[in-house]
Amino acid sequence: MRRSTIEILPIGLGHEEALAKFFALLRSRGVDEFFHPHPFTAQAARERAAYAGDDLYFGLFEDGAMLGYGMLRGWDEGYEIPSLGIVVHPDSQGQGLGRLLMTFLKAAAMRRGAKQIRLRVYPDNHTAVKLYRALGYELSAEKDSPYLIGFLDLSRPGNMS
Image (cartoon, rainbow, N blue to C red; front, side):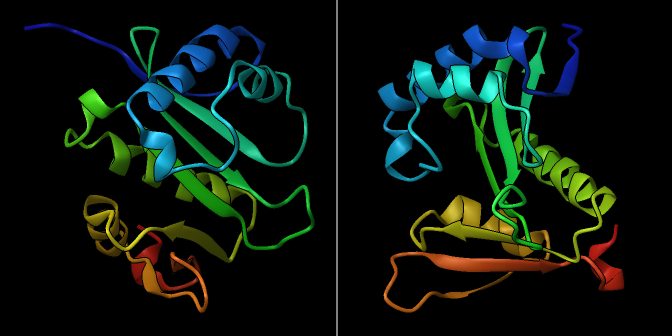
């Protein structure tokens, strides 16, 4: 049985290369068609690695390899409700890593005092929609938009676990 170490770490200067490779992989697999919070370029990787604001960017690593990327952002722009975004390596989906990253980001938002978390998802991204609903997000159609908008109320007792 293979032993591995899974870690969720804040993206920092030491992660630029891993993040750039991960972004390139996401582009090559077409993931950026459905998840595009920013360009998945080497420049964007450099910017995230050197970032020093109030928003949060994390990488999910296994034995040093990047398998996931998550963020809570909007605080830099003055929003009280952060927007959450995650992506998991296409070859590692269905293994609970998305749920792990979502749970971690919820805890990070709560530690920051957020009362809610917001996200957007394409309705035909069935796997993500199912996960978000299972985690307690209330999803509804956004007027004049291709997205569903989801909110998680962090003050509700059932959403605190």
